[in-house]
Amino acid sequence: MVKNYFLLLLLLSALLPFSVSAEEVLDKKSTSGEKAALVLNIGQHTETVSESTLAGWTQHSNIFTLSSSKRSEFENIYYCPVNNIFCALTLTEMQRHHIRLLPEKNINVDKIRLHVDDIARNVNRDPIDAKFQIEDGKVTTFSEPQNGLTLNTEKSVELIMSALQTNQEKYPQTLNLPFDVKEPAIGYENVNSLGINSLIGEGVSNFKGSTKSRIHNVTVGASRFNGVLIKPGEEFSFVKNLGEVDAEHGYLPELVIKHDKTEPEFGGGICQVSTTAFRAAIYSGLKITARRNHAYPVSYYNPQGMDSTVYIPNPDLRFINNTPGHILIQTSIEGTILKFQFYGTDDGRKTTIDGPKVLEKNPDGSMKTTFTQHVFDKNGDEIIKDVFNSSYNSPDKYPHPGEEIFTTKPDDWSKKQWEEYKKSR
Image (cartoon, rainbow, N blue to C red; front, side):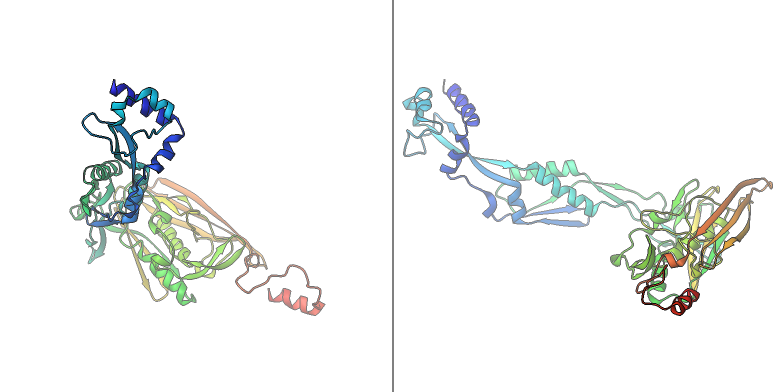
């Protein structure tokens, strides 16, 4: 009978709005003032959960129950959490002497999961292959491989919840969160099985006249590609391998062509690197799958027509390693000369370039160019014939900072001033 009254009491308390105010009357408690902390280990990485954060994950409240073995905790045994008529009909005098108030701990799993997801974004990393270089004609390792790590978020949430439920008074605690390890595809042991035995092609460009900040960006950008391996059949993405371009990754503000302006932005000069990589891919006889020329001719990329502009996330420079072995990229800078060298498997192919040729050149600096890549296999059969057409606008359409380009004569200019201005452009 007591059990039935108890169930009915809980049901009505949940349905009636009185349930909230009853907890307030009975002094609802919170863990916000508790001293608590968790130390979470993920491999070599450690995260500390503050007391305030931990308090936000849990909440103490009170519930009513009947206990035949305990006397009532209330001085007023006639207090009713619903209304007096209801209690008079449902609780006997005996039961009124056995009402108890029990604490209940609620854990907010959504907040814990959000915190664990934030940790995962900080610690998850892809495996990094070993990097190699050519020394005295041999392939050697110069960068160690690194394992990847992926936090098991579901099991981590379960572990934290279990700790909060079963060890309420034993803070601070240290928990070792579960994670998965992924080994790199290429390590030291692969050095002799990559098929790298010769220089298959190279690209060169000259950045003479660049500012110090542009030279800095070219140097930083080129270093990102030194030692990169491209697997057989893999489509190489310049943007993906380049990574983030900002101050945190070592870049300085420098001029870039963006929309209808030439303006400073972190990483200005990276196109010197992509242009040189494009030329190396062309001369190596690789299949180009994505390439775009610059908006207007830039002297750093002479001869015009063999440049490749990039910007995160697009446009990108992409090409396929259509050789039978891995390709190892080596970059170097000598004076103002940037060089990309592609080492790989010599399968007997031959590459010839027809051009670049200037098809049209206008007084305003706009022009059109073309060149053709011819690739022949060891039997002399042509396996690639790709034409690369480039159309460049006038530089006047992309003013530099502080420049103002006039297309019509200003009202306060004389005819002579306007004629001299047009000649200077």
